[in-house]
Image (cartoon, rainbow, N blue to C red):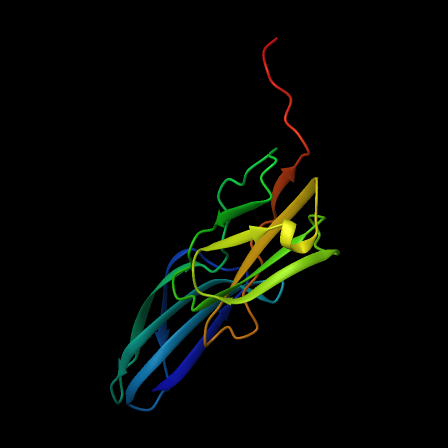
Length: 168
């Protein structure tokens, strides 16, 4: 395959439609990256765009968010080991997950790379951690976005030493 890369800032949503001009006849792989702050926020690829001599070819590509998002995390809870699920990203091959004590991720406590599932086992006890507020985030990778896409939003959760009964 021959590859054509389009970059757009800010990243559009939905379908990306553009006309490919000035290319030699053949079949092309058209990749579209929507950038925010220089990082891939949206992504799309069409693996088979045929170009004929003397003609322009319009390429339509499904363009999706490239940012995983965590679902509801426990909290406050006394559970020190749990599974956290996040949304899969179309065209992602692997994910990187980070755990931190702050939403800005200046104090990263642990990370996992080359994750292929859309859930990760969080074991605070294995890291020697206790009660506190923590944050998870994820980003996607594929063969085109080898440095990783833009990080998803930080997902907070809180671990407490005990939970007071409600009611009385």
